[in-house]
Length: 151
Image (spheres, rainbow, N blue to C red):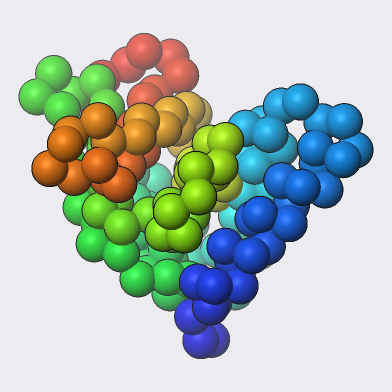
């Protein structure tokens, strides 16, 4: 399967926001997350990603899945206190247009969370936009166990 055109996804994202606002939806962040979450099982099936009980292996598979959708430099790390896994993205797809949409990276966060839930990992995915002046477009997807158990 070929990569999705980044221009198409950006156009779709802007059109989706316009549609949701026209329908009176005030919570764009949740709408984005829900769409990403609902896409996850289909993408896992399409890219033939097998179910696993190894969280790090699953995150590697999610990283590869995202690479099939669009190119961006990504890394996976864990905090020193073992509270979070972090997927760092240096060139997030939905920030490339220069238009600041309300929380567009929640689409990817929902996708990651949907992949985790499909593999029975009870985790939340939080999004933190980079505040580092040297990398203002950097985005962090923070994966935390819902039961506050360390990884």
